[in-house]
Length: 117
View 1: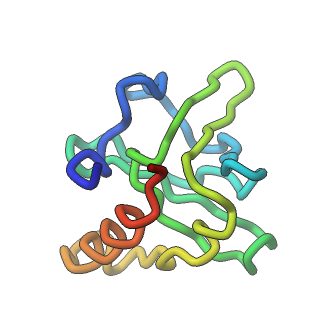
View 2: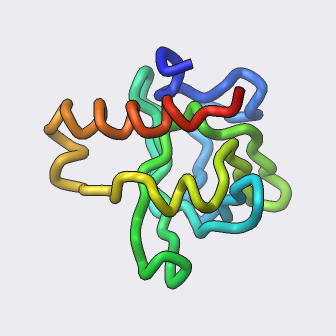
């Protein structure tokens, strides 16, 4: 699954170019925040989620492959992760994200090991 971690699953309902900023993000066990930024770049698609006060304002980077379903009518994105998995994820670092391939490797390693079986 790690090969496809940075691309949307074909069954997610994602449409290239869709504006997802502001969508609510739902983990398997509840809401975790809202999409602050996203990218559809081939092989590097992701969501940056602002978790607000839930985990003290931490922003997290979710690879697009963690998205299970996108509900455009209710502006909600469902991910295949628990709140705890997201809480323990590497914090989003906008400086490393842009130019440090090691950061993407770290994020890939974390989420690749927490995929549902």
